[in-house]
Amino acid sequence: MGHSNYNDRQAIFNLISKYEDMLERSQVKFTNHQSYHVLVDYYERECLLDRALEVVNHALAQTGHETSFCLRKAELLLEKKDALQALSLLDQVEARKPGLLRAAILRAEGLAMMGLHSQGLALLDAVKYSTSGPDLAKVYVCEALIYDSLKEYERMFYVLKAALDEDPSNTEALSRMWYVVEYARKHEESLALHERIVDADPYNALAWYNIGASQAYLCNYEAAIEAYEFAYLSKDDFEFAYRECAEVCLLTLNYHKALGCYQDVLERFEPDADLFLNIGKCYAELGNHVVARDFFQRAVAFDSFMAEAHYHIGKCFGRQKDWLRAVGAFQKAVKLEEKNEDFLGALAEAYCQTGNLKKALEYFREAADTAPEVPSHWVNLAQFLMKHHRFEDALEVLDEADENAWGPELLYCRSACLFEMGNKSEALLVLEEALYEDFDAHTTLFRLLPVLEKDKEVKAVIAIFQPE
Image 1 (cartoon, rainbow, N blue to C red):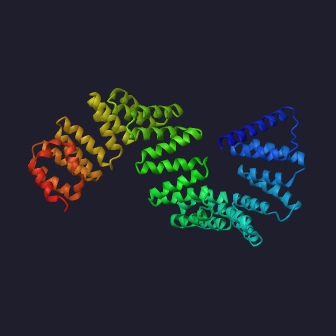
Image 2 (tube, rainbow, N blue to C red):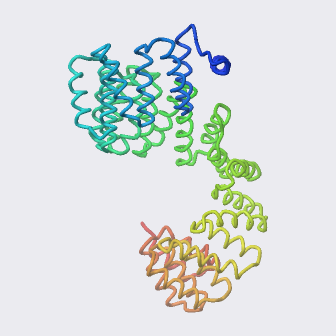
Image 3 (cartoon, helix red, strand yellow):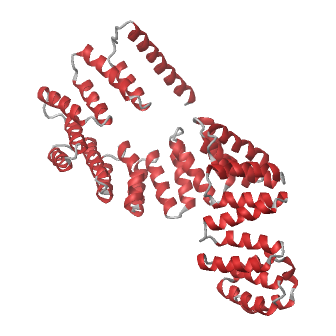
């Protein structure tokens, strides 16, 4: 497969080189007209629409306005949002060859682009009755595109479903299904449709991909992973299937499998900053912080403005107790995203570890202010104050937290603070309230104040609230 791809790439590069030589001599003329189509397809894939139009114009000059090139030009004009010129060209085509389905579909697309949606839909309705099978599927796909522009996603879903009923291999319908299912919330119906497709065609990679997307949305993660695997095993250059499979693996904490998918992407496709970042996350979760940091740094080399990569570099340094360099990395992350509470909290902790208590307090406070609805940032701020025997200040912070956030950890933190202040009776009352709210979170108390694990009264209260 790889050798075949190499040969295909080499052939297109040779054709481009030949075309460039012809341009220099101002004499573009291919004996095989298919060469023009190959060049147009290549430039279109690369989003070089002006270059694609240039090739089509040379083809038209050589072939005397052959219909296939006129229609190809109309397609490119529509891609460039030049509906008026496209419709004018279609008028010429239909005057010479009336009744062409492809011309009708392009005309409907052009009318919709000009805001004449009802006229475009009426034109498609008129041609439905004289077509069937794959041709009718193309009509439905064009209709779906019009509903897409109108943001009528439920109707778009059912029209694409009709297209796939006519032609289950229609790649455009399959490609557009994954996002319209999301918008229309039709995941169960999508599963039923695509499972019928793969029952008949087990190697339909796009259908497997759409099954994976719906299973992931429905939180059927193992089924989603299996579907994505079938997608990329059916089509080994299906980059999105590898990436989505890895994402679901991350959700299920299967870091080894996620890493395998990302490594496949790295070996087969052009890398990007997100890929390096995700590979780094896998290595970090697997405990290999040196390799993880290398991938995070590769992400930064690819995109120096990727704040999350700087943040993870800092976390790697922190896990290795290299807190000075952790501070530097977190500072870069915060500079790029000033209002990210996780970055601010991480920088606060790093300053705390280096002994810069003034800066630590400043950033613990800023993290809480940035995301006041998140209780953990208030707990971190209160805990910092408690460590430095500022118990009254810690209680004030917890009072402020109660006005903005809710969570059992706030109660456990208040109880710990009261214990530290020697107010044991009130601390036990607050502990009872916390245990009533969320018994399973009581380990928070011991994390904040480990000595309480051996306190007989604390153990007695916990025993009372122990679920049966």
